[in-house]
Length: 126
Image 1 (cartoon, one colour):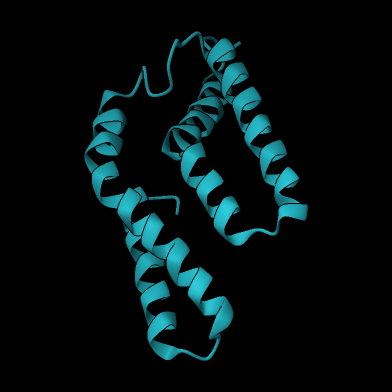
Image 2 (cartoon, helix red, strand yellow):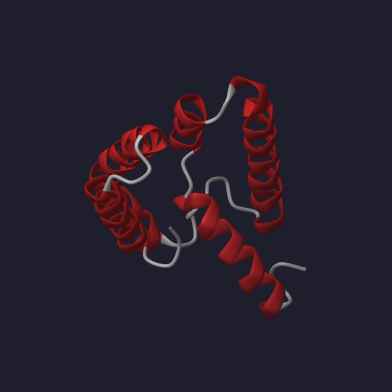
């Protein structure tokens, strides 16, 4: 079906792109720092659902790895990770600090900068 139906192929390729731009270790870090222990199970369940989705997208598409059919996306992601990963770490710390000082305008401004930086680096997701 993937090879014979362009609409389906496009949908699967878009899902594959979003999966490729996601980083489970970053998501786990957000959970560990910002989510109460009683709610961290949800993050674990979401990461497991992510892994299952990735498995089935690869199965349906016939690809061995995400971005296998999109070398330019692969290069884009690889070239931006060294910049995006530190911004994510900074964002986690800003969010942690904001929880203790919600009216701190400098932290709020810094949060907006990280949001914009991540969104720009990811292009169409953030």
